Length: 109
Length: 113
Image: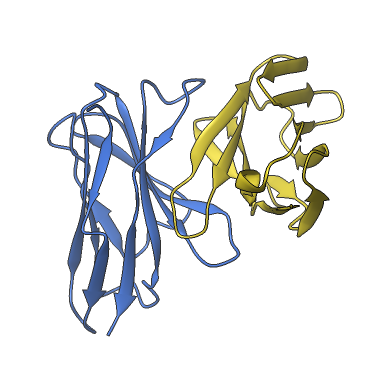
């Protein structure tokens, strides 16, 4: 059973729309949750982290965590073409980080 | 500039050869990690180290070895026992293994000749 699962996409949204990315995890004891953005051929860069149930906002990005349902999501408001990338969900469980396979997002001008 | 550096950017390995990937950080982070990424796949943990002179195997350690003689450095050796080494290798670090966020280096792409 995979620790972290994401819809691989591709997800396409028009410029200015809201992009919604979802992630589920299997271990109820997971402690910390992260979203990374990865451009093609580049290394992942951190967008946001969240530790507690609820929403956390940072600029155009909002992370949402629901531990009871074991899912974490990322909303990108006012999507821009520069947001086109693969988004990786990561979960800290035990003493390791586990990564999903990523969701490919394309923002259409 | 503070950050994580990896070298080389590209590395070519001949069959039967051991190669070493460099990872250095000047962020004063305690924990360091090595991941492998294959096309269309997530990151898989090879080895991690929470403190100097100590390291633990990740999910896919076979065919790899590491050392942690200095806090700043965590080199990865891909041995000849690793039969399918072609991948994008990422080094990461964090203040502690735990809630602290991981930051990634730019990566090394390993190709087999």
